[in-house]
Length: 112
Image 1 (tube, rainbow, N blue to C red):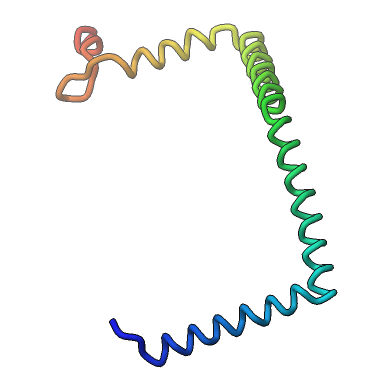
Image 2 (image 1 turned 135 degrees about the vertical axis):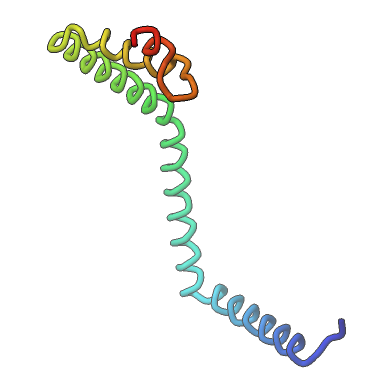
C-alpha cells in the first residue's frame, strides 16, 4: 500500500499536535497542570492501596453479617412455623421423584 495524500496529511497534523503539546507542557501553565495531575494521581494511588488493604476485612464482615442475618431468618421461621422444614423437605422430595410417561409420579399411580 502506497503513501497517499491522506496519510501524509495525517502524519503532518500528528507531528504538529505533538509540537504544540510539548510547547504547552513546557510553559508555566503546563507545568502547573502536570503538577496538579501528579498530585491527583498520587491521591488516587493511595486511595486504591487503602481500598485493597481494607477489602479482605470488608468481605469478611459482609460474610459474617450475611450469615448472622440468615441464621436469624431461619430461627424466626422455625419459631413461627415449626413444621416449615418438613414441608420444604417434602416439597423438594416430590420434585425429585421419577415421573412416568403421563407426568405423574410412580407413587401416585400405586395410590390410584
